[in-house]
Every structure is written in C-alpha cells, then in structure tokens.
Image 1 (cartoon, rainbow, N blue to C red):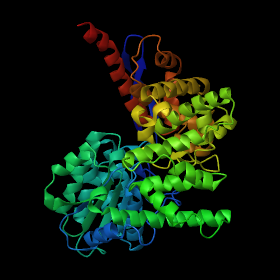
Image 2 (tube, one colour; image 1 turned 120 degrees about the vertical axis):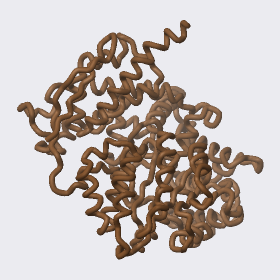
Image 3 (cartoon, rainbow, N blue to C red; image 1 turned 90 degrees about the horizontal axis):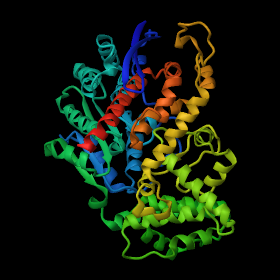
Image 4 (cartoon, helix red, strand yellow; image 1 turned 90 degrees about the vertical axis):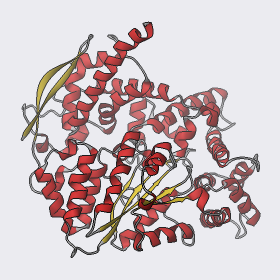
Length: 557
C-alpha cells in the first residue's frame, strides 16, 4: 500500500494545508490495471451500437482517399479530416475505425466528446490508447507493462511523459518480426477536448510517430477547423500530414448525392413503419429536403428523427420545409431546424400557464444537459435539477430529434450532435431559448451543493471499522450509498464554481458546505476512487479563493 497524505481545510480567510491519511491498495497482477481508461472512448464501446457509420455508396471519395493513405506508401503519418459542424466527420471516423478493426489494423481509437466525462479531456487519453495498443499488438504488451513497472506513477505525470513512456518507447522496442507492421490510430473530434493547451500538446506528440522504424502507426484525426488545431498543424512540416476539408474538398454535387441516399434510406424506413404509400414522400419533397440540408448531414439526420417521432408525418414535413430561403447559410438552416424542434415541443393547445412553465423547465433542463461535465440518466438528472420524473419526461418527450433519450432510465441522456450545444449557448442563434452559460453553471453549482449537503455524512458506506480498504467493499454497495447524481456532484461542483464566475466569500454557499462537509466530501471521493480528482479540485478552490481576494484590490487600484 501507499499513502496519500494531503488535506486543504477551507477557512474564512484562506485554504490552509493540513493532512489526512487515506489508503488504497496497489494493484497486483496485471500492471495494465494501473492505467486509468476512458471506457467510452473506443468506437465500439458498450452503448455505441446504434452510432451510425457511412451508408453504402456514400462518402466514397473521402473513404477511398483515407484507405489509400492508410495502406499505401505515403510518408505523411497524420491524416487530418476537418469540416464544419454537422458535415459527418464522426460518422466517417467510425467507418474508418470499423473497417480497420475488421482488417485487424486498428491499433486504438479515442472519440472525444465535450461534456462526456472521461472523453471530454485528455486526462485518460494516452493511458487509454496504451491499454488498447497492448491488447491489439501482443508483442507490445510486455514493453508497456515494463514501462509501468519502471514508473508506477506515470499516470500522474505530464502528457508528454505518458506518451513517450507508455506508447512511443514501447513501440520503438518492437523488432522487425512483429506482424502486422502497420496500424492506424483513430482520434475523433479533437476539438471537443476541453483544454486548448492539451490539444496543442497532443498534436505535437503525435508527430513523433515518424521516428518509428519497425512498425508504422498512422494517425487519422478529425476535428472542426478551430484555431488551436489549425495552428498546431501550421507548426508541422507539410510532409508530416495530409489534410482533407469536407466542406471544401468534396464537390457540392457529391455531398448532395450522399445526403439524398441518406434521406431516401431513412424516409423509406419511416414509410415502411407507418405503412405509407409507396410514392411517399416523392422526389420533389426529397429535393427540397436536400436543398434545406445545405450540405449538413446533421440537418438531414435531425429532420428524419423529427419526422419519425411525429404523429402526422405530412405535417412534420411541411413544418420543416416552410420558411426556407435560398440565401440562408448552412448554419442558418441548422438554427431553423433546432428552433422548429424546440417550438414544436410547446404545443399551441397548452394553457398559457402550462406553456410558460414548460418553457422555463425546458431552459433549465436543456441548459443542464448541455453544460454537464458528464452525462446523467433521466433519473439522476431529475434528482440533480430537483424536477420530478413525470415533469422531466413530459418536457423531453418531444425532443428525441435532438437528444438521445434511452427508453431505459439507466443509460445517460446525450446530445445527438455537439452543434446543438453551440446553438443553445449562442443568443444570436437561438433567441428565446438561449441558455446563459454562467447562470446555468450557477444553477448546477447550487444543486450540486444542495445534493451533497443532503446526502454526505461520516462513514457513508456504513463499514464501521476505520481503515477498511476500498478494494474490500463491493462497488455495487458504494453505488447504492453514493448514487450517480451524488457522485457527479462530488466530482464536478468545483468545476461548476469555476465556470460560474462567482467569487468566494465567507458566507458563500461553497464556504458553508466545506465548513460542515469537507471530510465527508473527501471520504466520498475515496470510496469513488477519485481522490486524485479531489486533490485537483482543492487546488482549484485555492486558486479561486486567491482570485476572489485579489479582484477587489485590483479593481480598487
């Protein structure tokens, strides 16, 4: 066993360091168990069965170019697929990952997702990649295990150290007899990583695959053309990467052809489900839908979901097609379909008071969903937001076109596409449905503190005996004592405090909570095996308190 000895006690004047002993056992047996993994990162992670891949005869041009790069002699080790929101980057990435997985050439995959917990940041990026590579390339496994043994605390070190110790170093040790000699690493939505500095570091480190001689590792990477990523590629030599811009390098006619296949496929399914006439919806209607899609697959996908969930499909089609303008930009078309879905959820038949209440609830619920640092199930979201399950269900009932709402209450609610988050947080784009991001974080902060104050207590798992090892207590019992919404509050309340822009003071709700529940909070983090995250949160609290102390002085000066 090793000891973690650290405690910051928050007082009215400062955060003062004290110490507390917390114990956890070393992992025995397989050293790979020491590496924390983002379980939802791979393309084929549990729960992703319904995530789409490219339909046959679509995206042929870009997929052919990616395949030629992957299996050919091109010396450029990185393929950067960029494109605007909704152009189908993630679908292509899943297709590339799936095809190479079948060919046994997929080394690893990591699909970033903002607000997706472990897949929203780089904390488990290289450790997850290393674990997947160890399982994919058997000769590599002992070298990675050896690296862990030589540096047991590697997971707490810089990203650069993790990359070179866990991945690059072991790959360099492979001999020329290792087969197959070529693998691909798929990294999707790098722009969804929540730290721009980490994005820059990842791009810098990935260029080092050029040094590999006995094995070839290709990096397929997708993102929006955001400034940190564009700048990162500008720092590379042209000989190091190949670029493909979806909204530039594919002709509009090809994109329209692919969207038409997508629409025909999904509308045919709706026609069969509803037993509609064989001529439905007609070529002219499909042409109008293609025009409104304006090159965005996410528009077409949202439209199909919106039509499918309606009682009268013809009315839904009419709602989608009315009011369009040939001068609208792709973003404006996307804005209109999101507004249409939201407005359609508040029916004209509702009483005025019902409409007002539903409108307020929608803003609260959607605001919470889009800024959560990790997705929650409907049951947990209901308890966190203090909205009854029936009301939550009613509010979300008409939003399946933009939200992935599982029938079972256990899986989390997710956005179908991150572009909805961008839309909802931009006042110019969504108008009356706009969510003030700082206010939403303040609301979640207050709810997190309320939930923890109501739930946390000494010996919350009821083990009785001091010094009981976490490993000796069933995880199911810990989850029963600390349900998902409470675990979320414990993990992320400090981050909501940071994002809220609030200043700390003696009577602040965070101060009042820590005075009573600091040790209870730390104990909960230990049971959750998240003490390292707790230490980082305490350091963040110290930074916030310092800013809160200095800001009045700076303002006065």
